[in-house]
Length: 227
Image 1 (tube, one colour):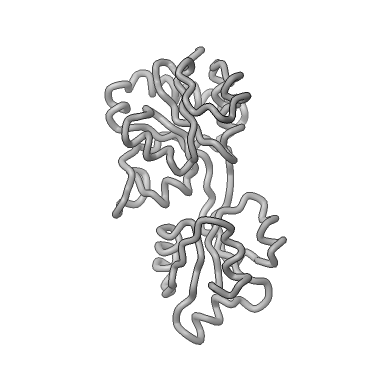
Image 2 (cartoon, rainbow, N blue to C red):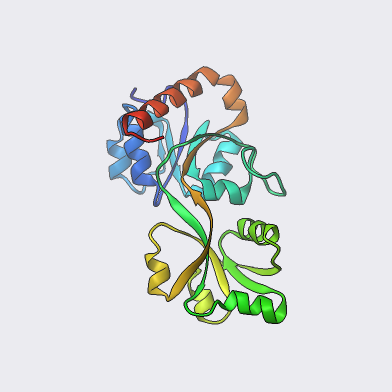
C-alpha cells in the first residue's frame, strides 16, 4: 500500500527510526523521502509524521495521529491504558509489541562496593538520577527502598561520577556506555521494545483499518521469525 490505509502514523526519530522505516517499507509504503529527508517532519503523501519518541503518545492522544510507534519505556513513564494509571497518564491504547529496539531498563552504580547499598545502610535513603522518574520511583517503592529521585535530561552517567547520586536508572542497549563510565548494572527492571499505540477514538472509528494494519504487522513479524 502506498499509504497507511488512510491512517496517520506517528514515527519516532532517533534509535527506533531506521527499524520503523524498514517496517513501513515492508508494508509496501514508499519510504524513500522519509529515509532521505531528515529535516522534514510531515509526509502527507504516505500519512506519516515524525517526532521524538517521547512526543509520540502526545500526538496520538490528541488525535494528530491515529496510531504511533514508541518505546515501552516512554509508555511506562508517561502512563497509558496498557500501563499503570496515574497523574499525567496518556490516554492511548497499546496494541502490539513490535519486537525491535530491544533495550533494558537498569539500576546501575559505580563499580566496586555498591554506593547505593551503602547509602541505604548508613542513611536509610539512596539518591538516584534518571530520565525516568516515575519508573524509578515505582520500582524502588515496590522493592521497599527509600530514594531521592533526581530527574536529569542529559547524560545520566555523569551524576554518580560527580557524587551527586549513588545510582542511576537508565535504558541501555549494549551496556557499553555504562562500562566506559565505570558503572555496573546492579538490577534489571524490565526489557523495553517498540510498541504500536492507537488513539482511542480512532481505534473505534477506524477499527477495520487499524485491524488490517495489525494483521499485516503480525504477518511481517511472523515472516521475520519474531514471536
